[in-house]
Length: 202
Image (tube, rainbow, N blue to C red; front, side, top):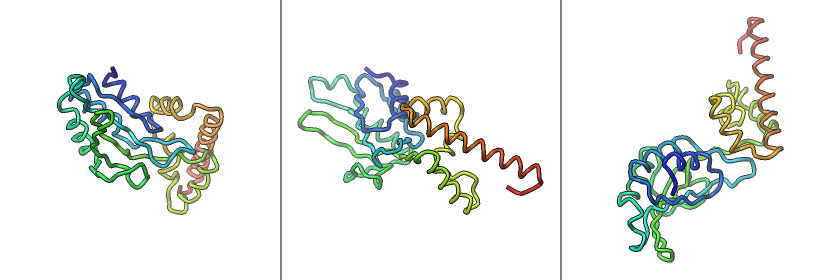
């Protein structure tokens, strides 16, 4: 049986399609978990699909129905609505459907589910991707493009960075890409400091 905190942590770090069984969770627990887990776009690692599917089991047949809060599906739907999601019965696992959800009844397994296609942000491809994006941002008057991994690293808190490092940088190549992004950020800071010392505008 998953806890509200455990569910929130798992959802927040999701980078692939996953099914979550909400058996044993109260309505308030569901609201708290999803409000925390889906408050921000989910980060997808380089090479991942453009969209993922999060399936929340909110009910079952009469033999196991008592394991689920009677208002579980309403709790999920209302929380998603408050987070800016919209119900779309025709939604599918494609990038265009990000920020939508649909209610489903799996007659084969006799399960009621809420399928969520979350808001996502795809990580850029390491230092080269950040460098190209930074050049484009500079032309637009921005120091760091908001859709780059460097931006996410630059603005996140230390606890968030540690969580991202654990969840998104599991391989050596991903850790190397993160280090390259940090090196690029340090270089940018040094360049900004040099301009400021010389009285130049950033």
